[in-house]
Length: 419
Image (cartoon, rainbow, N blue to C red; front, side):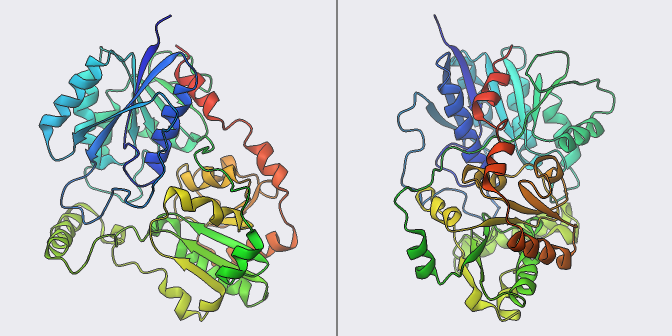
């Protein structure tokens, strides 16, 4: 019996970040079915060359695809339209029946539109939409979104909020919404973001010894991942400070890279990129959406809680991830805006309760008092109150496991392969 060829288009394992982890996990889930020949067709460069940021993972050593049959092809350079055509030809040459395109930022809309248009009619074009409404709003986001997603045969969303945003972009389309994967005209498959299985607890980790090494107290709150304005680290630090004023048995761990501070600032090339990118952002973004000057970590010193925080302000390689979750009791997601979060999914992999703001999709996945607690948006006092409530009324980790029973990669892969 011949296998169906499926292409997962998105960043390959050489890149940093949640979308790479997601695309790799999806490829592995499809590969495990044994009825698919799975390929990752990846960017070589995901964004305009002027963006002053390092996107390649130079820290991780492990091969996430080891032992699988997934094949990776690095083809697509955002800055070279000739590679967009090469991408289309590559996918066609593989004989793909389905291509699943990761949609995570409208800035990629032009090459993804070109690729989707070139594949339309040759295979099922599936856009896996992590969000429709940008967290940073550009003047041309809606146009690029409409162009690219307009070429989809099928769209995957991870929250009803995302589906509502999709309907606003395409008000004249009658969508067929399903959670099983059955196809109709303008099909939208709604599935929760699956739980990451790339990272597993380290069985031999001495948690108490690690807490002592990092100077942590009995109860540990965790902020993990890229530091972006929308993730509300400044709010989390301020809320933690209020908790610390009432309890002396709490610590805050912050592990992640400042999103706009990954290049050597002393190099002329970095300074040039910063200048050009700054001009572009002033033209395309509202001033309030330019986050490059944000310094949320400064709140630690302002509030005098240095001794209560353990901070590792750099990219965390794959091998380093598990201890941060194993040493913690709850994850802080006091976001300003939220689309389905890779950090949320990663937390579930370690059965960690979530303390989040009631924004975006969080009320869909977090049942207040069951697998986590929800705080009022923008209300730091209420965030601190929620943290105190967690200390007084801890969440049973079995509840977290129960809540995530329907968030498996196997179910996700089944829905994709339904037709």
